[in-house]
Image: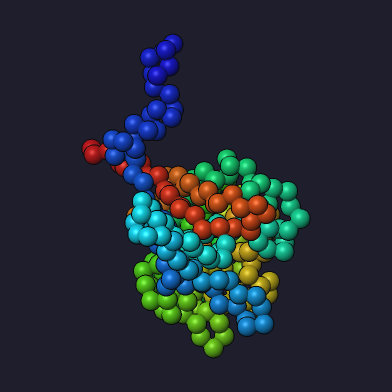
Length: 269
């Protein structure tokens, strides 16, 4: 409470909105377990560890009062944060690792574009500049330093093989068109791109003129990626606030995280 005006401060109003239910918190994070799919790379390249968990004790002779586990996984497992240093284009940028990125960048607005019907009809669907501009005609221009989240409902694929959707020429999963990411950076100044698939790029992105253009352009411009999201169907097209803080790993290229969305409920007329 501001003693001079008698009005609650910004943080107090935010907390009151959460406690009253006027601000809804949506968990955008998949549950990590041994079935969590991880990206499949050519066999000659290094591979990420699958998620593993090992019980240390569970109120037994190993620890009568404790239940806890060891776990291991790659930095880019499940719902995770991609830092700029993850890609060669971002390796020499300042503050490009999970322990050096300014924390203010872990809180940002989000625009959500629903491509679920397109991805259902075509697993290789690519989100284009024209589609984003059409979305803006209805919902307004994407604010600077916002996330763009591509809703595909891909996270509803609970079978790991169906989720990865591997074919003869690699994965068949939706993502951004090669022209979209440079446009989002130069024309809309987004902070990052989020998706429901195992990575922010489309499954066929290794075959694009610039391979993995989302990684190349986003990270080369000190922006971020947020793959492996879920529950994007619970978010409005605009007006969402994201909290996306990764683990503070020294020189980390990314990490699993608990991605949370704050959504203001519309008052009844």
